[in-house]
Length: 271
Image (cartoon, rainbow, N blue to C red; front, side):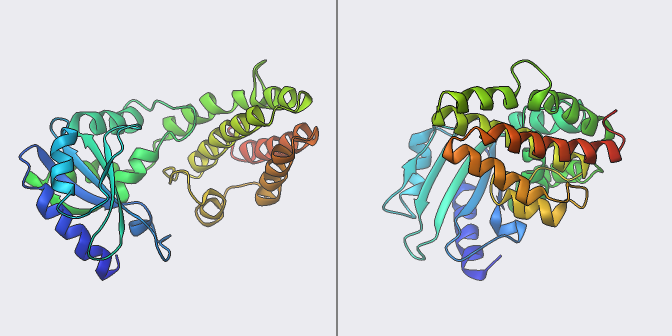
């Protein structure tokens, strides 16, 4: 991590660690993934035994910034721009019981989601620990350092593959219907869902925890040697058809899934 970012992270971690309920503080996201660029935000994760009330977070945040915001719309979180450096902070607050449940769901019970199954595993395993009361996060990280469970690979394929085009309400059929009525909002919505399942499958068959929603094509090319040869071109064709609301969406989506079929068959994951 860049020294300027590291200095801000340490300052924030030290202050929030004074809250007795805070068990650990860590940095993850682009700062630890190697995908950082100029002007990147910094994602700081706070783990606590109970939820930290918004007023408490606001009082502390005001010490660092004049534009501190409470953004609890997607779960407990805050955003602010550091007063001294201009670095934008995205703060995410998770309870220890909740994140333990998310890790156990994939690494112990091998339960798949509809897209993004292993993102929390990725976040925890790639985190740089700033504060760790009683080595709680260190122990959780050691649990996440295990090999990718083979039952989880199969569960992700079984859960995400049929919705691509096998079932009557598949993404393919929904996209074709949306295109026929020139419903571009629906096309956008279903295209996003299609790719959520597509990439969940792709990262799973490469035994790579899902890295999240950003730079997915680049990350797939970097991290996934097992992938369709024309993956990027086929993805871009689906996106192009979706944006313009053309009936070519069906042709492009079928080509995308045909190539994924070949990849899955080569890995013995599709009959």
